[in-house]
Length: 547
Figure 1 (spheres, rainbow, N blue to C red):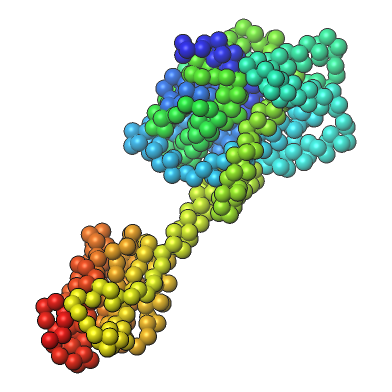
Figure 2 (figure 1 turned 120 degrees about the vertical axis):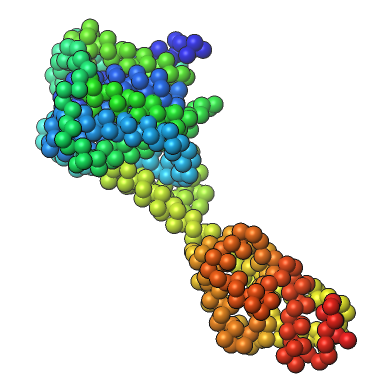
């Protein structure tokens, strides 16, 4: 934190200015009032910064969390929120101790990019009512709320608010290109506030009166009688907090160079924050991508910025409420509009979309689901689609092809014998994974083998085999045996052996002595089988040559 404190302090101040109206708004929309949002931003913001696993993360109340909390407040009141917050905090700490954060590395890059794009769109659309100077319409779907706000603006245009929002956003975007180190968000917000005050501009609604102080910590509202019924909401809150926090940390790492978060430590920090915030009358918190993006874009490099953000909000609550109450909502909307635009990395999105068709599909679906549904469903949809497409791609790589076995024949043989062996023996090499996603295709191919006496399966190049693949192989062997075709295998590896043994496939092969370590040994065994069947004249010696 001592490396470049000036930049961190400026970044924290900028984030605090951006976070203030969000904290107030999310507190009100949760049903517990503006003071709940402020308490969450101060307490959770400071504790998550101290105990979390990211140097750049900024935590507090979020819109996604508010959607989960509204029905809890309606049914259980403040006691329900306190109970859910404490339970969710405990669950997050348990996840941290179980080192569950490491599984975030399995989230594909298209899911993260699509999630970031969707969040940027949601952030931008959420600012439309304030940017247009209209009251925020009712509704929990951002697209519906935005459309109603536009309709209201068309009926009664508020050009002052629109000009302030557009002006602040333009100053931030253009200023960042000219002088990236200057906190143009502060400059623009201060300028917009002065203009509205000096010229007494109507239509530039201020954020309004702030509460004076934070409530003392208390367990008085804890609802122990509803622990059982609140377990499911607590699990949902913990899952959302973990998911949004870890994705936010991943996004923050991607926006910088040399930063890498500790996922398990981040879960622990969020758990501590969610244990403490409800005790001060706050709501469950999570890392906020919007505030984290502002933090990164304004030059933050350590936890000092997030701590400064929490300290500034605390000072504002106790000392500077009258001054901050005059900031126009439209100016703050402009700050977040610029932030949303800067979150979108066009080059990265273009590269991801051009990589493969599957990547493009996952990216678009995740972004659309984030915009239309919510964050948890969006990530789940992205993961399911990405997993299905990945399995399809892996299964397509597996193949079975016929190979010429005569080069591996032991001993010396005449052309006539070569032709006779080729007529009665066929060898196949299976490459790639033999698992549930593509195993049945091999069953069909093996079952359609022409009329031969012996089939040799070379398994040394099978990369993995699951129970489904082993069962399919067993079924193919039994079907071929019923047709009078002997099946021999070679090159079986330990992992494949375990799968085949578990379904009883090796019992069929061992009973006839048809498992071999190498392909030449399997070919010799095939020749011996043909001699015993009277197909080949003479009798083979130990090397497989005819005497």
